[in-house]
Length: 81
Image (tube, rainbow, N blue to C red; front, side, top):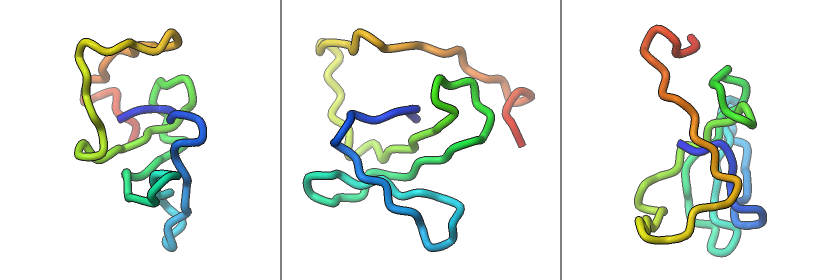
């Protein structure tokens, strides 16, 4: 999961149920996943972007963003209800 996206690359579309927000590619409208806000996780934006792995190209030797922040993993007892 991520807590932000690349500006201009992702479009948010509220789901009909009002509980989730779908995220799609701004270029091709392909489904990327969903974004959840206000869950209380210790992220800089209080958002959790659940992105389908098939939509991500991983380059282990690629550049890392200069503003990349790592947060610690939560234990099961720390996960908000």
